[in-house]
Length: 378
Image (cartoon, rainbow, N blue to C red; front, side, top):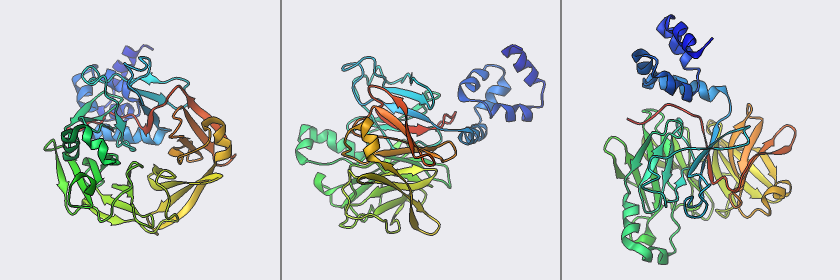
């Protein structure tokens, strides 16, 4: 039966049945099926349908991996993609065309640690960033925030400050469904009065705004903030390491329950979101210990550990904590990579204690896991 015949057969069904069938399909065929009829187009473009389709995709298997290039692809290596996506289990990645490349072809972007509903957030120290749907190619530019404008104004003298810039966070208010890029940064070194300053981007006004009061503690700049269950999280610069939480709905800060690690160098611990749980990967040679936080009883427990002696065969001697990316195959396996030698994605099987290479290339750039979706921000 041809594709045309299948479509005609589906059109003879009640439309609510057609919707149920369509929401189980991947994004690429759905984009093509918008041309079948006005009714199909209206259905596929409906936010309600897109949410249901995304939920189906989340439940159906493992995420894809978006890889953001580490280098200036047109100058250093024209074969390296700005953005590429990898379907786990595949031996090759697929380049994602980016509509802004012609204007920003010499710009190297960083990516926020988390994806939200198939959306990812790219940012740059001195230029506009983007919230992007890598599957549909939809994107929304982010104008420079006050921090970026200050850095632009300082010019090259900014580097004389020895300032360690924090990373941009990206998350979603779980009550309203509002997406929020958030920049929390230490302020004293750049001439501001507060210990920290917090800026939130508002899509309804297309502008950044300050959140007051800002965080009560200075933050560790190196690790990226992580979004879990509607809150962003940072490590603090306190004598005893704390985790600072920012509720994206109330826009207030609080300290997460005492962690099982203290006085740890920022390069040796890294936060991540595994199965919608706040986790911390801590280097404790010869192992990398993955801690998981139970928000119900406010306790931490050891989820698993990575043998650094074994992984050094691929990564060399570890200087930074390896970064867990996702739990795979019904939570039995852990996908992770080495931040210093960004060439290999690895999988650790908790049950068999085995290690396998999931993907290898000259560079995998900055990887972030996401489930393909049709969702955009209106």
